[in-house]
Every structure is written in C-alpha cells, then in structure tokens.
Length: 401
Figure: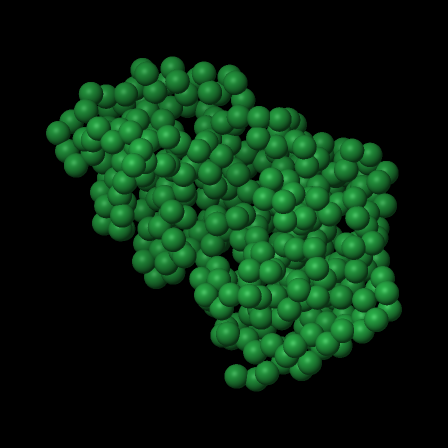
C-alpha cells in the first residue's frame, strides 16, 4: 500500500508547526481519486442528497446503512468514531469502520478535541469515503467527559482550528454537525465561523445539548431556518422527523437541502421510502445483510431488532427478555419468526413507539397495550424465567447474572 505523505501542520493558536507521522491506510476500498470539490459542487457531485441517515454510535454500521439505502436513503454517515481510539487501535479501525461499493455516498464522522489527532484519524479513511464529518452535536455524558461533540460548541476558536486543519490536509471535503446554542445569534455566528473555515455541508440539530432524553422537547425549525439563511453552503435539518410526511414540513419550514434522521430511522429503516414495510420483513432483511457484513458485536444487531420490533416486543415481554439471552443468527431469526406467529389474529399496536419512549403518555400507552395484548406463554424455546432489565434509550437488555 502507498504511504501517505508526511503532513506539516500549523497550530493556529501558537503559530508553531508540528510533524504528523506518516500514515499507511489499513485497507483501501473505494472512492477513486478525483479533484476535491467543496460546498455546493460537492453536494451536487454526490447526487444532491435529500434523505440522510445520521451518524449514530454503534447503530449506523455498514449493514444498517445498506438496509436504509435499499429503502430510499440518499446518503449515510458512519457511526461516530472516537479519534483517539481510532488512531491508537488497529483493531478498532478494522472493526468500527467498514464500507463496500454499495455503501455510497458515505461520510465518516469523527469526535475529538485535538485537531492533529482528528486529522490523523481521518487520514486512515480519506481514500474510502466521500467526506469527513466533525461531531459537534453529541450531547451525551460520554461526550462531556471526553470534551467533544456538543461540548465544544462554545469554543469557536478550537472548532475553527479543527475544521481548518482538516480542510487544508484531507483529500475529501469536510462537513460538520452542530446543535443550537441557547442564543440563536450565537449559533449563527458559530455557523459562519465553521463555513469560513471551509466546511462544505452543515447539519443543524434543532435542539440544544440540554434537550435530550426525557427533556428532549420539540425541535426548533425556526432556529434551523435562521442558520440556513445565514450561511451559503448546503444545510441538513436534524430532529423532529418521525414519519415521511414530516419531511416536507421540515424542508418547507427550514429551507434546508435535506433532512437527517437518527432515532426515527432506527425504528423504521424504510422511513424514506414513503411506504409501509412490515417490521418483520425489515428485521429479516437486516439479518440477511448481517450475514455478509457482520457488525462488530452481536449487541449491535440486538439493539436494532429491539427498535425495529418495538411494538411487538412491548406486547410480548418474555420474548423481549429472551433477546438478552440469545446468541447467533439462527436464534435471532427464530425470535423474529416467533413474534410473527404471535401476531396472527392480534391487532397491531397502533401509532407511536420507540421514538416517543420518553413521553409520559407513551410510556403509559405501552403499559396498557402490553397488558391487553400479552398472550399466555406457549411451550416453546421462548419460555424462560430469566429476568432482565432494559435500557430504553439503546434497546440493550441486561441479564440478571
């Protein structure tokens, strides 16, 4: 393999130069070398995407990206990749970043607060992706502890340094994903700073970093619109998309070029197709794809099945419990078929599900629905006294051992 040139980077704060060690890609799939495009030229070169799959930790892996593409997604992002881990671990690079010819266009997202380290991480994948994204939107506690994501939003000088260094030294365009600050004027100022640093596409989540979990609240489309009108690069709107009809409303109210979905598309990977696809069919198809492009860990697969089959699993507690126990695809396939057989003759739980799990009304509705629809246990491989607890955010189940 060809070793990439040594890069001499300049610290924008001190003016000092630093040698960044030469990097040899671990593997090379994909994107042919062509002139570097930016902004609108880049956006058009990848097909002017309108339906975008968000970067999601442990959830937007290759198999799931392919599933979403088969149902209308125009563009997909990798899971958030921690730059420090990615640089320090060859195993992490091999397991956490995978792609294939069917996975286009694709953008790799990195998180971190050290410009040179993010650049080193991005260098490993620049020949295999269409762009590199900087995570400035993650609101979770792990991002606060690691000092990255949305916890950099009030450090515009550092953000400028990160984006500028990447733009100057990568072969591919750089994009960014942010959240709103409490003051819209501050958000606009930050967006303009990011644009001036060379960002080609900006994604704006219409909530602040405090609006998460049970405090999520409504999305601020007016805030997104203000940002969109303040910059001259393409903008994707993120947040508030649950069903296909929400997309037109979002684009009309924000004026954005596309919508990015995260939680809704985890529950319904056919979201962008504008048609109903039976969740069991989607679960089967996902498992089929996983046979070819195995996710790094079986827990990724279980988490996806929990969300896709959320309605039925809410009605059949013992099957949901079993999800914590099974190992291997044959057992997972049996679980999907069991749920399908139990649905025969029973009403489908209506309306809203996992996406709305944090609202009190939805939690109460799910309890009533489960009580009404839960069938007596049958004598099958799904009978178990094994007790588990459930993480409602991720769908992960934890056994009592």
